[in-house]
Amino acid sequence: MKVLSILGSPIRNGNTATLLHMYEKGLVEGQPDSEITEIFLQENKIQGCSGCMSCDLGKIKHCAIKDDMTEIYDLFEEANILVLATPIYFFSMTAQLKAFIDRLYAVPFEKWRGKKIVLLMTYGGDDEEDSGAVNLVHIMEYLANYTKTELAQVYGVSTRMRPDAVAENDKALNDVYELGRRLLTV
Image (tube, rainbow, N blue to C red; front, side, top):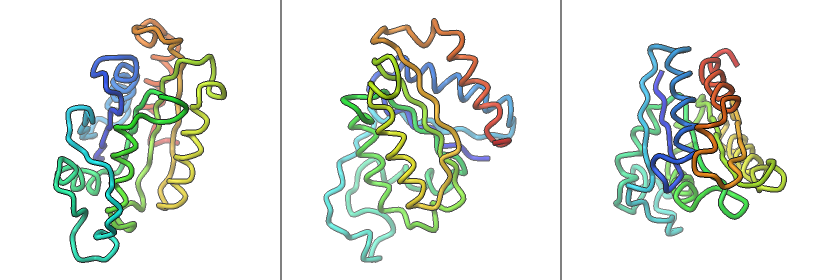
């Protein structure tokens, strides 16, 4: 099983990364044959979609923009599982993750089918409603429906804007580990 993990936080070792790494640890325990490729979006040059529609015209393989997405497209197409990890910034995903998802429009829909999507979120509010996490869940539900994929798991945890909140939250660490471990039984 090939897993493409996307860290959408601009902070390499923050709360969202801690959540993602514990999820991956559980995933490997539950599926020892897993191959996980993790991409830290902040270190990649990914331009926003230019709306040129070259990908829709079928004249090119993916996207007319030549940046780090060029290498990521093949990883995406090979993956069975897409794990998206993001903090909630101003009631939705980070700009890094938004640019990445927008650029996935260049992937033919038949390459999406059969994939499972996992969404992991951290947020500063007390719950998903007041933090905006619920907005992102709805976006991902629409995306999964549109691309005929499965939004298999969603997990979010409040950090209350503390830098080590996830690392100190045994319940969240255990919950997300177990989610990863049970992914293919869902």
